[in-house]
Amino acid sequence: MADDQLTELFADGTAPERDTAFAQRVDARIASARRDLRLLAFAIRTLVILTLAAAMLVTVRLLEPTLQQIAENSPQFMGVPVPLILVALAVGFAVRAMRFVRLRLR
Amino acid sequence: MSRRPARDPRARLEEASEELVVVRAMTGDDAAFGELVLRRQKRVRDLMRRLCGDHALADDLAQRAFVQAWQRLRDLRDPGAFGGWLKRVAVNVWLAEARRAQLPFEDDEEAFAEIPDPAPSPERAAGRIDLERALAGLRPAERVCVVLAHGEGMTHAEIAETAGLPLGTVKSHVLRGTEKLKQILARMNGDG
Image 1 (cartoon, each protein chain N blue to C red):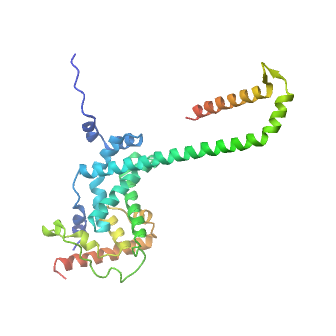
Image 2 (spheres, each protein chain N blue to C red; image 1 turned 45 degrees about the vertical axis):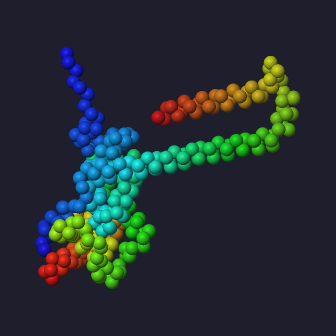
């Protein structure tokens, strides 16, 4: 058998053209893969939030006596300790800056 | 002034060039990816059928290849190279399955000396030469090299890159595999 005959033999496949049933099966598998990916993303997000919340809780518990001392000894503005106002402002600016950076990077 | 009726988006996709459909699929258009599956499924399934010999497993692997292609479509740099890229994804899916099933991919002369006799296919019943059955007589590494060289028209260097085999091994597999395939086909036709 010559090489051209062999190539000719290979040119003739057994699968049908534009098989919609096959395409639907691929579609169903993609939908399932997409569901799995969403579930994984949700699980990762939840884990990150829970870890951060736990870390924050532990930090606050550890710093509670020091923070209480600072709050008692620092000047107050409208009944709120000034360091607390400054921390709230710093967090606000940081969040704003992060959003701005993210928008610039897009 | 009369307005022309809006055409069916699916019909528009069918007529669009493959590059355009790939670009749309890369932006997350599911209908465009569906159109790519319809256009390319025959080639991927034929490739898998030649590599496995088992139609059910081949179709399952072809589906897996399309799912992987959907997941990795954003990695594709040139939309015009979609066909070759999809072929590499499909071959990698088969190679992973061959490793999982522990097929003797490395040199094992005796493993495939006999031609396996799978259930009769409609093609054989219709009197056509059963290329898939003849290919099953080759060792997996030879089979992938022969199929990619003769069926997909790939060069030896491309096969080496796709199958992860050394160039010299690919050359020898194509040469010896082709000779072996010709002998098997001759035996099946009753010539040898």
